[in-house]
Image (cartoon, rainbow, N blue to C red):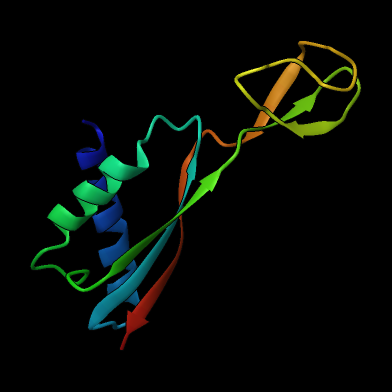
Length: 114
């Protein structure tokens, strides 16, 4: 379960931001998880709840925004959401696609107590 290593990295980033802002604690963590990121949201939640004990995030709530996979057709130039793992442009039926969102996980925001 690689979600544990993801949360370890996330905690480091949170602690770094908290220190830079002289925060005493973190009350909310908001992340965006792409559907093609390989991260399972329920496992990420379990890992976060495990690792946050006795840290600056001990009382933090984790909010997860699940990002659809967004593609751009290189043939017709239109953007669309990939549905049902159908990697074909719904406008021109082209296969020449560029994924523009939904492959990564981002730390979007933190609510800090100072």
